[in-house]
Amino acid sequence: MDINLVFPIRFKAPVIQDNPSGWGPCDMPDQFRDMPYQPFSKGDRLGKVSDWTGATYQDRRYANKYASTFGSMQQYAYFHEEDESTFQQVYKTNVPKPLYQRGRYLRNQRNIKNPRNNKTQNQLQVLGKGQKGTKTGFSNKNWNKNNQYQRNRWNQRGQPPIKNRDASVTVRPEWKVIEEMDFPRLSKLSLPGIEEPKELYVCGSLEYYDKAYDRVTVKNEKKLKRINRIFHKVTTTDDPIIRQLTKTEGNVYATDAILSTIMCCTRSNYSWDVVVQKIAGKLFFDKRDDSEFDLLTVSETSSEPPQEEGNSLNSPRNLSLEATFINHNFSQQVLRNLQDGKRFKFEHDNPFLDEEEEDEVAPVGYRYRKWNLGNDIQLIARTEHDAVQAAPNNEVQFINIKALNEWDSRYSGGVEWRQKLDAQRGAVLANELKNNACKLAKWTVQAMLAGSDQIKFGYVSRVNVRDSTKHMILGTQQFKPIEFANQINLGMDNAWGILRCIIDICMKLPDGKYLIMKDPNKSMIRLYDIPDNTFESDEEEGEKPAENGEEEEN
Image 1 (cartoon, rainbow, N blue to C red):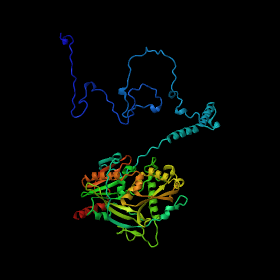
Image 2: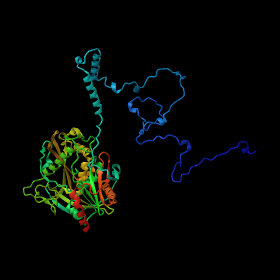
Image 3: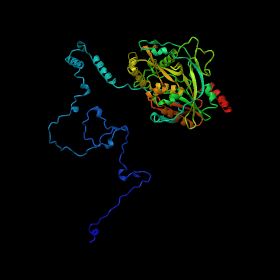
Image 4: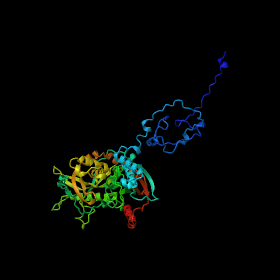
């Protein structure tokens, strides 16, 4: 007998959806078409697959344990519609509540055992018997003050909210954003194997460092003097030497200050901007004439940066002016004033020096150097030395001199220099590396670009924390730039990679003017396309066609 006649069996093959270009179904099944979808975010807190605890989490910390970033999840809420009025509980034994449900550790009752709070409770009981508050020395006014004190005490446990910072330049509506580069992506770039630079031009003169300042200590401190000398901070396109070198050398031009700002951008928190001009396939990195690009930042990378406003002594801008003033005076005070006027002179004179102000200009040595960054990119930069010193083998060492300043230890890490500088200098330096990571990294990059043998730091502190006009030198410390870069975890491969990435992006753009700006409140930099007449005065606009004409003729 055929078994199929008695037990007819039919097998229906399921529909198989073939997706040759990927994986998963090609379209949505009909039974799932109208099902609501709850969006999610990576920031959502993940719970369990099934949570049977119910309302056991009475603490506010767990109130929104499974809350979603996109709002409530009412579409997935469970509603039992059947009538349960006939339900009766058979087991009626009183189950003791767990500790977290007994209200033992509520915030309002946490300080009952405190004698101060007990006194307050006793006074309230006396007031409840009909007596006036003045008789017991306690009133509603004092009660409000006590509550305000408690609220402030709880608020002070967390960090104060950081105010939104202002951009270094106002972004106009007609500016177009070409590229946005976030710091996590830039910090992963690397360009190893950069060869030693080629010397193109050296000029200027330098004074010798006074080694007597190496013996300055907290017990033997010296007063910071005011030395009126002129510091030339000439931008790239206004440099006559760079203008001559553009005819024969390189296709990217900048100064060491601009390069260090770009190469250390991932450590910066404050806003800054650099103007990029592309002319005939060549890039020029400049700073704006009316910018505060050359001012030094103070506690920029601190966990609690200064946030006071207006004319306050410790506002960010006033602290920057104070730090720049200290750095200029310290770098000139530690130089030896020889009677015969002997200086270390380079082959050529200072190109920014006028005959009338020769004695008033700070001595600086300039090196114009060229780096080969690959991909037909030839970088030319003007670098600086601050002084020279005699080495033990009678050789001359080039050094860069910078000053670290203490403004108020209570708001800058709690490390008081006068107590720890002589015995625990490493702790002081570590605190400065934490609060001023960007500034120290930029100084180190500038010293390495210039080829300095040593970088010397001076520790300068206020005489009184409430007076920003009088300072004392408490000590000095010197490092080799390469060793100090390793100590602060500064990788030059990453610094060159960041610079090369920005240069490659600008090289692909047409001729014109652009702006690189650090976002004031986000960890990213933006590249804007701006009109050619931006940041220029009427005189410069009239001179620009003539300059372009001269370059074309050359």
